[in-house]
Length: 385
Image 1 (tube, rainbow, N blue to C red):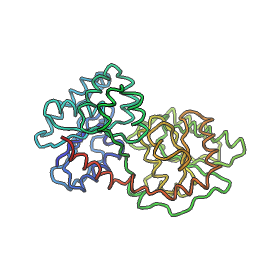
Image 2 (cartoon, helix red, strand yellow):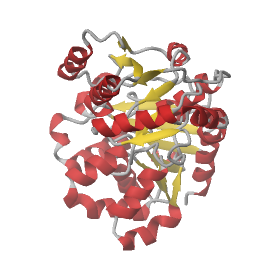
Image 3 (cartoon, rainbow, N blue to C red):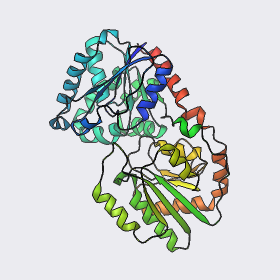
Image 4 (tube, rainbow, N blue to C red):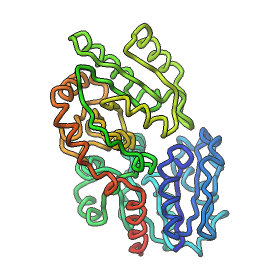
């Protein structure tokens, strides 16, 4: 079986690299076509995979120019033209588009020309970017949905939001039987090194934050929420890791704001990006995790934290919200709401022991191992017609 992946975000997050590596282990021949936006051309060569399945390869396309940022259909047509020059479509069995509105649009155009079946995923960039910015293109987005053999959401919350609030009821009825939820997987480094410790709260809550230091991750609001609670007498520390996260925007102004707020506070530690093994060691020094972010397709770091038996504060109405009932592994908080974040931290403290015991019972491998997720996708490919 030969799968053509269209993945414009490849080289930024390691999610796709992990999936494609697992599919390679299952013997799937893969061509990964990466149409990089003009601002991301520096990603060429990132995350190369030593494929074991003959014929598999990664193709980085740098055909896109800055003007394509606002010329949507010209962007799609440019990608299609470049892809056809570089890929033998006659050898392809099916297409996997990593997003709906960009990668899925390319897959739809190829489907129209060749009849190749395709599936697409719907992510944060589709729901909160394309559907908002290109509202006049929604009719075209519906065409992509209708022609897709399968439609995958990374989380139940995004499925609920998209089907319940964004697409019209008649479209929902047409596509809902082809819709499914498959989460992203967590690196085997975390699953193979799960904590066996029982986490406890003995008067001090040692929070850890692991994410890039940019605005939508909510680090400033988290600091201010903790400050509120400390002023009420709670003993709380924060270890924030992720400054200088590779292949991500570097927001100098925002980082300066974070550093200014943290200055002189001995309960705050700001650290640069670390490797997974180092993050595991840091998580084992904490007794809870927090990241209250905006526009989060999934949030792998929540699962990574759970693997180390950490109760979590996560983003309300975003990707991870809905996998577990509120209060089972922690609490969802509204991004940007400082008092709301403080309230959820307070709730976590008050219910810490019960939540920590719940976290210890989780069988994360079942839902979040790339081994199982790869098999799920392979089964989907076999059904695409």
